Image (tube, rainbow, N blue to C red; front, side, top):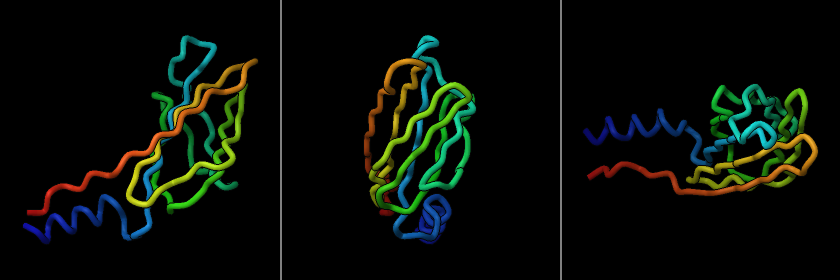
Length: 117
């Protein structure tokens, strides 16, 4: 049973000991604050994907500082220094506006590991 738990954790968290989770949520500040789908996400000049219909993109990245560029057809912003912490999930909540500066909130939470006892 312990071997299965270890193998499952390896599959979930990958083989890198320095991985960090990143969850990006993008909202429409001019359309009732609903999710903003199809926003291009570029991290450290690498296109990593687009937000889904819930305005969300979830990926794993190496720990460290990253630059996040978010771009839709009508708005864009750059978050210059977002810390990704090993063993934690970083949640970045961004509300994009047409004429106002974006609002950004960054939160960190520890990754919970199931009890192996």
